[in-house]
Amino acid sequence: MARIIGVEVPPNKRIDIALRYIYGIGPTNAIEILERANIAPTVRAKDLTEQQLSQIVHAIQEGKYVIEGDLRREIGMNLKRLQGIKCYRGIRHMRGLPVRGQRTQTNARTRKGPRRTVGVQRAAAK
Image (cartoon, rainbow, N blue to C red; front, side, top):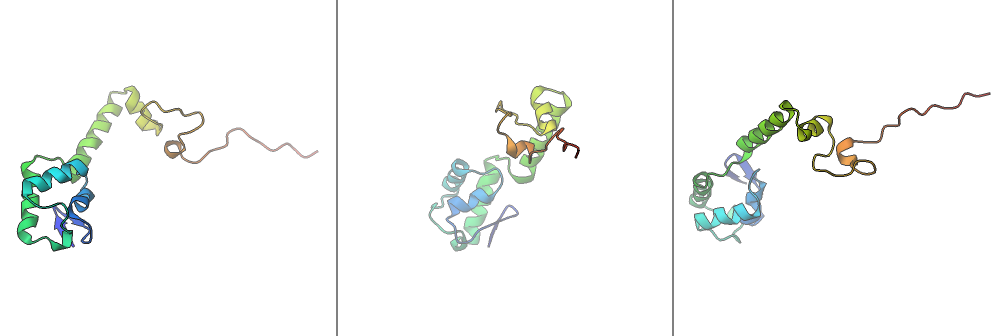
């Protein structure tokens, strides 16, 4: 398995697809990185030489991409900031509700979790 910046990328996939396994690199960034490194996107990850792998790492570092731990930390700090100033989005994050204006009366089961029945009791047997 090829290891790029501490992430194992799948060996049998094309390198433009395999780079997407790195958190923070999507389709557009993957193609940009390969262009900077002068590597064809159709090459399989297992067929890369050590020199090509180092070119990819160098292209990622030169491109100033925020990836993996730094990106996760930055996103976490942004959420903490929103929650700290008690803005609408921060409150929605705290309560585990949809943040971007979706309806919640009928949908939003992914964010809200399984249904919880409230206030229903069985009738007493007579």
